[in-house]
Image (cartoon, rainbow, N blue to C red):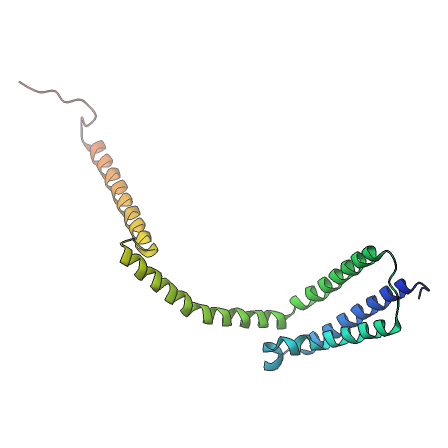
Length: 179
């Protein structure tokens, strides 16, 4: 370890991040079948990592290491390493089946809650539009579908008429009137 107190502080932080990352990965590895408490309680999920981080920072602060005059460079280095550490941890965690299952449950819960709310809002909007004499989205969509069907029928009739006219002799020749 370097004699510089700032370097000691940075080295201690690096160790803390690595130890925290390892603890978090161990916790994720043990959580193959999440318990209801960890699946629903974010505090229980993050507590081991945060407790370890607080303990490490308390240890650093009690040692009284003084920051160097180049505080902004240290802060940037700290943030860069912090982002890199979290990126590694989250990338590994998000690649697990446990994470996918938890995200699936979260999405399912959200959809179960939001579906009735969305339906009630749509009904309210439709009622308001009807009261104002304005067509709803569903009515406009139905009208567009009907117009498209009418256009298809007209095209089909034009095709049939063209085929009939082609079969008639002298259909293309001008008619002359007989006196």
